[in-house]
Image (cartoon, rainbow, N blue to C red; front, top):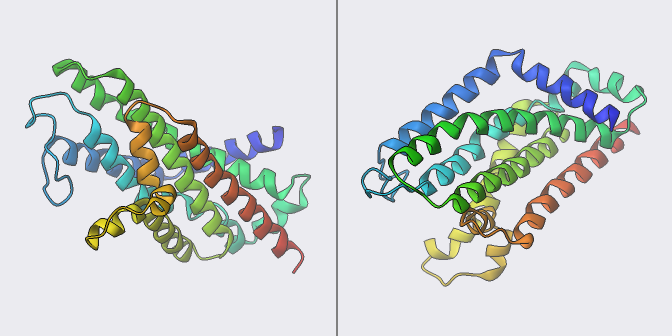
Length: 245
């Protein structure tokens, strides 16, 4: 774990040593604020809490997840692709660390960045609590769900980054995978069909909505942790296979 922690600290320092991190967080908070406080029909068809005259944080979490499908692949696209492009991956793998430790360390660094970004959104629920008394359960569940979804997105982005030295390619692959698994449960509805349970099981949105209600089902938690574990395992295998080429 010492190697994982060292790599995570290095990765987190790299994030906040670059203006990209601050721009990404500022853009995230700005878009979140605009769509939360002002109703934009084609983005948030539901009423915001001002129009509904009640304290409702659901639009905040739903929009946060949507933004993450774009922002987190952009954040994670450099994790391994940049190392390969610069030729530093070979140097890193000659150190006394395993491929899994490298992958886990980079993922933990990215999750640390995610936690900082999410923590900065606490200003929104504080304002909501000032005008109403929302149920604390869905608020806690919403934030827990957001962190689980975000971690899964970052793990998928890390996996995509292990497949190529091009950050742009990694970004496109990650955003497509994240979008497919997030909105796959809406396909039957779009086609005017009945809900398909198999698609619900694979849908990030389906599991997130369950957690965001404030009732945390271990099946939903296990689903997201399984996505993270599978992505880490595949990314580690990808690094190991390239080492022997």
